[in-house]
Amino acid sequence: MTTVALPRARRAVRWDSLPPLVRRTILLMALIGVWQAYVSITHVSHLLFASPWQTTTTLWNDWTNGSLAGPTWETLRILLEGIGIGIGIAIVLTVFATLTTVGSDLLALLTSLLNPLPGVAVLPLAMLWFGINESAIIFTIANATIWPVAINLSTGFKTVSPTLVAVGRNIGLSKLRVITDVLVPAALPHAVSGLKTAWAFGWRTVIAAELVFGVAGSKGGLGNYINNARLYLITPRVFAGLVTIAALGVVFEALFGALERRTIVRWGMQTS
Amino acid sequence: MTSNRSRAVLVVAALAALAALVATTATARQQVTAPSHVTIAYQPGIGYAPLIVLKAQKTLEKQFPNTTFSWLVLSSGAAITTGVISGDIQVGAGGTGPLLVGWAQGVDWKVIAGLDWGDLWLMAKDPNIKTIADLKGKRIAMPGPTSIQGVVLRKMAQVKLGDAHALDSGIISMDHPAAMQALMTGQIDAHLTSPPYQLQEKVRGAHIVARSNQYFGASSFLSAWETTKFYSQYPDFSKTFYNDVQKAITLINTNPTKVAHLLQDDSDGVPTWRQYKQWLGASGLTFTTRPLGLMRYANFMNKIAMIKKMPSSWEDLVFPPVYPTKGS
Image (cartoon, rainbow over all chains, first blue to last red; front, side, top):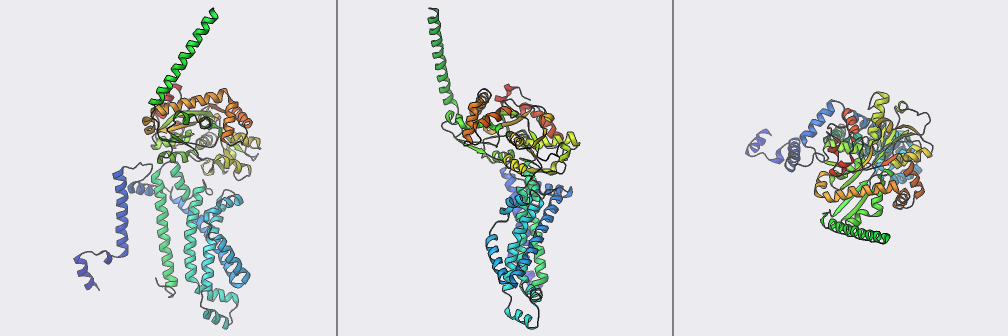
């Protein structure tokens, strides 16, 4: 392989022949260059735009002094609580739907009604029910994650090969054991994609909810950090908050990728 | 004979005055270069009465027939700041907090007219909340952490608790109408507010925990702002605007009944003019174009690091038409 690749590399570095990571890094650097050039050339008001350099120094300062780390953990904690509750309820609903026809009808009705609702839309109602506190945000996140997870799980259950289920029944498994031992592993690709959707929905919801709230709970989260920076007109902080959110998105995307490789790809249920 | 003569003198004088008035308004109309579009933004509250009077009487629309005017009501000074930075708002009005935060961060704006001085009350409904110390860990609503209410809360915390930021984690950003509802339904514990909301809350069973005047003395509450760019481009418009605000304030102070009717019309009849008249009398507001205590606020905000740049004098914060008011 190397003997073939070497002369090609010597001729000219072809874009296609570069590893994906290198290609993406080059693109990222180019984008940052355009960003810096825009700020340097247009002299755009510092109230409207922060340069990559300002953003980087703000990121560094606020991560080292904890003023950005605190809100990030706070947001992640609330998010995990909300998603955890959401997934729990989704599993109960889906199991109920798989076991009974009434449950299946109920789930179909609820998901068709509630899934199209943008997550933050229920925030005003949550504020009335729970007051202006963390519970309202957790409720909103849970609601935003239940439906995509439930839809994905039940699709997963429905698309399991009937032969597999028949085999399970034949060897005398109870209805519950059919679910835990046959349906769940078989529906895993759908479950993982449900989890990814839940994560994306929950993430959006928590940031939006924090932007609506002044302070979420006792300490503010990332949305609050960004909003405060806007109120105090410290634009580099707005950018630093956004970069943090984007970076976390990349990190979690990678984590989900790793999870998929370890499970469903390894088991041959999905090609990477 | 003498009476006839003096009458004749009077008539001549009146005619001369009229002629002079016509002449000046005619020349004024020709000279004033006015922008083609002006958006004026303010917030909910009776403290903005001078602007609402201008809006209801269409004063500016009559003086500048070639200019289209838009009037916006936004929920916080921070929202108005954003609008001014983006260029959507030419004249913004709000409290001293956002004015100074913006000024110190490089928003190139100054006061074109003060609107009033005001006493802002910290209201609570729970009878157990009696002092500032009782507010630790409680939820306190206000338009935002940089609002004038935010500055007042820091001052209260510094004086009573020894730490200006002791109550920061309890700040909840809400506009005054929403916060009043939230206070009444128990969703929040306290509301640092402004007239008429503090008066309404008192009537509905809340009590005063503290008043801003106890901490800052009598001082400016609201003012109207323009960017230096806009001011230097349209100095005549700006001067006329200042004079109009002054006239509106004179009307508020001399004929509150008429003003109450104007406010009622502006809010489509609810609340009634009687209610407005009572509020104007009991609000704790002093309507004046004279800024008072801007430097006192700036000093405190600088001390607690809310702003990092200090104006060298109050005149750094206002445009020339405001100089004669001898503010502070």
